[in-house]
Amino acid sequence: MAQKVLILVGTKKGAFVLESDGRRLAWRLRGPFCETWPMNHVIADPAAATLYGGGGNDWFGSMSIGSVGPPAWTSGYLRPPFTC
Image (cartoon, rainbow, N blue to C red):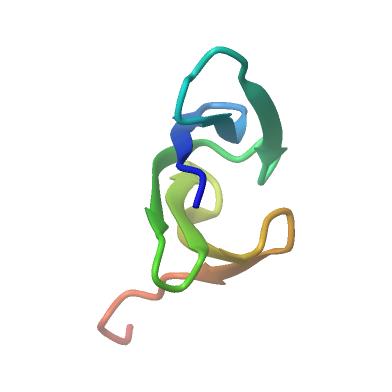
């Protein structure tokens, strides 16, 4: 089986995925995912073939995002654990 190498990047402009084979001679850039949302963290779960990201902004607050085969991202806003 061919080895796949991913570099997951979170930026102020969204999440990006750089993908290459094991030799790392050529790279393919995918994204931005969650365009215009600041993404602080992007991680991969190879067992579930899923990418997860976390970010947010000053107006809408924090959010968590998961993908099942990019670019089909879904968002889930984090709610505070208390009521006002």
